[in-house]
Image 1 (tube, rainbow, N blue to C red):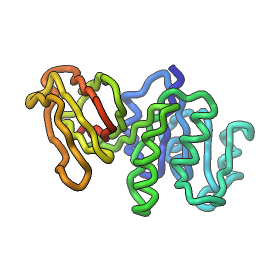
Image 2 (tube, rainbow, N blue to C red):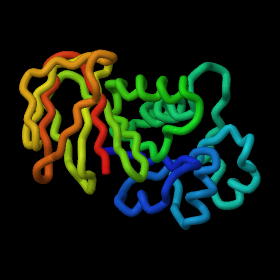
Image 3 (tube, rainbow, N blue to C red):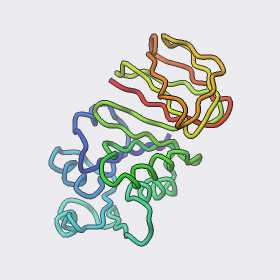
Length: 202
């Protein structure tokens, strides 16, 4: 599986310890975070407004550097995820992306529904992904809780959790997030209609 882990300016570097055998991509000041901590990047992507291109060229090959523009309303992470998907990514983890403009955060959450590549948003306390119709196995990892958020509505069943759910309908704006706990190593989430955001939480 072709997997990319995107290092952003706000990345907690300790998160990288759990990723072995993946390609790291630095974004904007995340390039400097990676370089300072000795993380070898597969690619560096930036608009080079806050990062010096000449400095990045001092430790990376020109062909591994990409400049993005601000020509449309996409957030930088949408652009980067779209680019990596075209490069053949099957899974993308974006570290600490949920800071900044609210509309960009919302647009990024919507982009999680992309069916060409599986995208996760992760910080020190949470890991979020979108799940559409189907049966999904969610690994507990080192998180204690899981919350399900309708996006925008869904009918779901949850198994191997403290409070099992069967064919329960949830709608954004009408239901609160559904908190739960994974009993052992995995939970099974069955989305029978619609889609949800599943957030693993510490």
